[in-house]
Amino acid sequence: MKLDRENFCRNVRNALAQQLITEIDNQLLDRLFAICEDELSTFAFRCVVRSGRCGFHLRTRKQFLAKLRNLASRLQLEFRSIENTIENEDGELLRDTILRLADIIDMMDVRWRALKGMANKVRHNSFPGALTFSLNMVLVAGHSQKWNQQCRDVIIAACLHASRIYPSKDSLADIVSRIPMQRSRGFRGDGT
Image 1 (cartoon, rainbow, N blue to C red):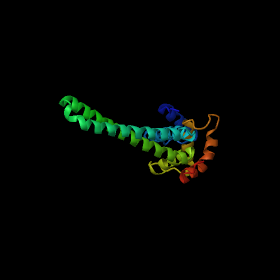
Image 2 (image 1 turned 120 degrees about the vertical axis):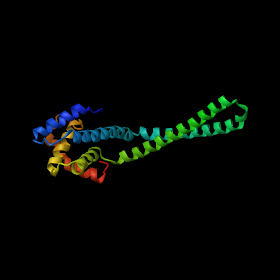
Image 3 (image 1 turned 90 degrees about the vertical axis):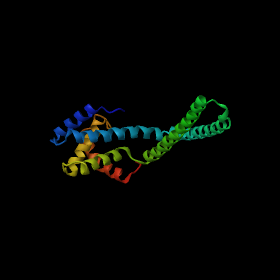
Image 4 (image 1 turned 180 degrees about the vertical axis):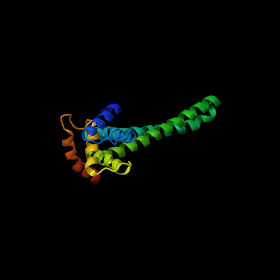
């Protein structure tokens, strides 16, 4: 699900205005939007991880990278054995291409390890809890306005509502009532 910045900001401002909270500046809204957008993409990835397909894809990709690395190594050895028989320009082009291939394989390996690490992380984090905890941390530490926890919970609920994490029929009050438990789960890192 792609989050639209304008709609997000407008929805958060409208929801907060109904609660008489108007001290939200654009810089803070941008930070809250960025967190929500990042967590939504992580959540989408988590759905793939939990579907079981991800493990298969990771294993397949690891095997493919091992085959590519083996082929690239054999290609480098073969090229070294005939390097003296190839013209200068062609030899340089082949050498550069083979080295670039090895670099690309290394880059793909780094991406694979990052994907595997991310899959392990998102498999064990609760989605609304982690997002709620992150938003709360920004509101506590990252802003000059000092809100009490109840006010922060309303701001968090407005962000969750604007992100369409909950059905539109859920009222802001319903979402606010869930925030303390989500914040707790996000702090503990539960997989619920």
